[in-house]
Length: 223
Image (cartoon, rainbow, N blue to C red; front, side):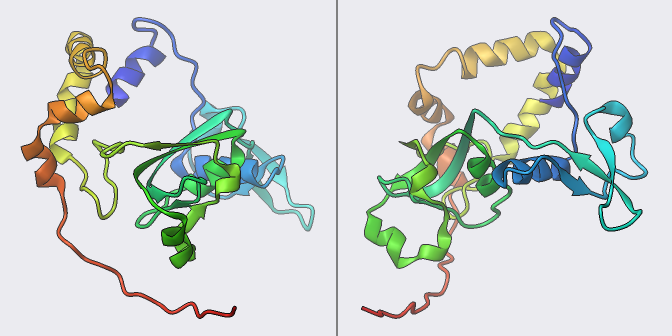
C-alpha cells in the first residue's frame, strides 16, 4: 500500500530506493523497451514537479525544429509477469477488457510468465485470434491459477474485491497491523490455493459476474 511505501521511502524501518514516474510515464518506458528505443518523448510532465523529483526525466529538443519535450528512459525488465483470462499450452495468451500496458511490458522483458484463469486448446485460440495479445513465442512459462488476479479483477471471471481494498487501507497505515496481516495472508498460507480457500466460497461467489457474451464474427476459411 502507499502508506507502507511512504514509510519505507522515509527510512522506516529501512530505506527504499525509488524512481518516481506517472502512470503514463511508465507506459512510455515499457513502450520504449518493447521497441528497443533509447528513450520515449512525452509532453505530460510540463507544469508538474515530476522532473524535479526524478533526474532521469529530461528535456530533449526535437530534431525537426526547436520544440522541447520531456523524455523517459526505456524499461527492460528481467521478468514480466502478467495475468490473463486464458492461454494455450504453447503460451498464446488471450486478454479482453482493459488491456493496460501488458503487451508492451511483455515485449520489453527478457522473460515472460503468464498467469491465467484457464488453459485452453490451441483451437480455441485460433478461433478468436484478435484476442491474442501475447504470442507464445515470447512466453517462457504459463501458470494456471484461478483467481490469480485477486483482489483485482479478471474480466468475465470475477469482479474487483472492493471490500479487500477498503479493509487494506487502514491496515497499511499501521506498521504493526501490516505485519500481522502479512503473517496471516502471505506468510501464513501454504500457497495461492490456500489463499483462495481462506477467502471462502461465499466471498468468491459474490465476485462472479453474470453472463454477457460478446458477438461472434466470421473470419472466413481460405484454405
